[in-house]
Image 1: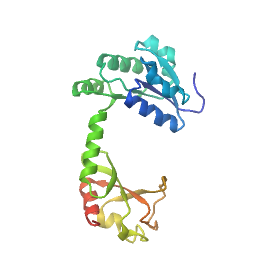
Image 2: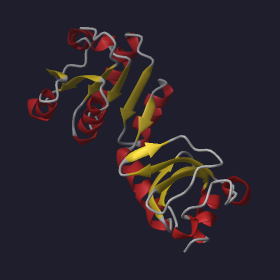
Image 3: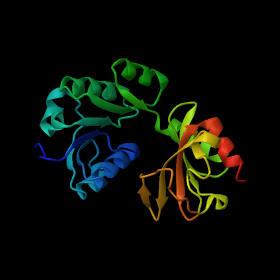
Image 4: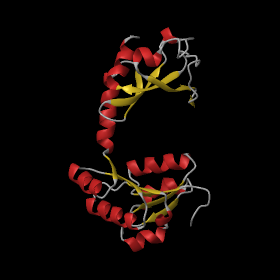
Length: 221
């Protein structure tokens, strides 16, 4: 079942989290092998040309029948069934797949999977934290926390910076933050240099410490 020239991502458990992950991966031109015990959850993915399999069995033999052993990475979206989540993780690891990302529903669940070397995600906690940060930021359209101290911030370019260059406002020297991209009409431009001209009809994507990002925003309120 190997799809030549195309990355394959496995998604086990297609509830709200798993479905959103699978749809985004498909939208980016990758191939998805999706597994869930509920056919209704898989139906949206069948219309998007994913390979779908109805199964509640997380045994190595059953997983192998889906071809998921050919995947480059696997996302495990099983939540409440912690035993099923752990069993799926162990068997996916036996296939030699190095990157596994799992949704977790408790600290104990996370602790077990982290000891197995798995990347874990608390969807509700992540969303809650991100929403809280957005509410506290003054100009932010979106915030992506990379650690407790460092974030990527998306803000509408302040009117005061319209027509000025990155070098002209001494963005890095004066504010200690970096402009990594601009966005206009849904299209991102990552070719940023000292001569890049800022425009108030664009969005700035900045990286830096949370303290300095907040200081930058406060200057334009």
